[in-house]
Image (cartoon, rainbow, N blue to C red):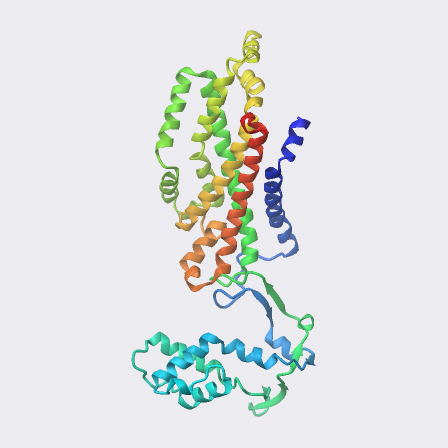
Length: 416
């Protein structure tokens, strides 16, 4: 046993796959202990906030200010609102309005903004311009207000007696605050999703739930496949015919189609994560049964099995003590693959809207479903779906690596 374990951990593929899988597993355990946040808590009033550090504006006004004279501050401020795309859009509008193109220098910010301020009129109807384009130019015009100003802004407050706004302070363009001195700061490494929820917290919880689904589905499928394969391979006869009839029947029917029909018939109210996992397990055992049966049929006439028969041992004892240890390595590999398949099937069902109900806990498939419904891939909101795709890929990749490593250890044909 020790020699076998030593061989397994000498396999580079198994070790790499195991490290990746354990890293994901530890993240799902440690992160909720450090950040005790409900994964489905709505924290943002809006959709798809980009990743970043969010500082409370109200608190930053009252925080200590520091003066920094940075040479590129003004250029960065202008560049954040007036990039190459905006400059080209302004040029297109001005040319359509009748300004000669040779009079427009997109590299001269002052000239370009001056031409825009003196010519742009939101009420003017430019030929061939769509409604969406007009709205874009109105938003662009609003964002350019005061872009070349070197003055700060005045902070005003209501006078409790007159109700009029009175200046209470000011913010210069050279004023900065230390982020550590602002009371309310929230780091969103993966931004928010379409509902305004923290994607990272949601992703960690979804990974944990999907792993649990894969574990339950893999356990159910492997146990059923192992039990039926052992019985069919060793007992044979009528028992083998019945089991193989059922196995062939389910093999002919595409598993995913069967899952769709069963999930739809259950109904959304009863589709919890555990229910979906059990359904996936109950439909995923046939190939395990066929493989275990083939292994057992090659073992049932071995000398040690015949000796156990002559000794008067029961069928159950022979199967458990004399046959099962010889197929255990294959069962472990089948179990790893069944977990991976269970996670992929859950993700596929959830994308179609047939996964676990959406009001309880997130899963990787549900996160993909939400991102697709709200068109995150079309809008370019990569943080809503790309981390989910990467997580699913890492889980399946790590398990396939572990399975390949075990196969190289236990399969004589693949040994060096």
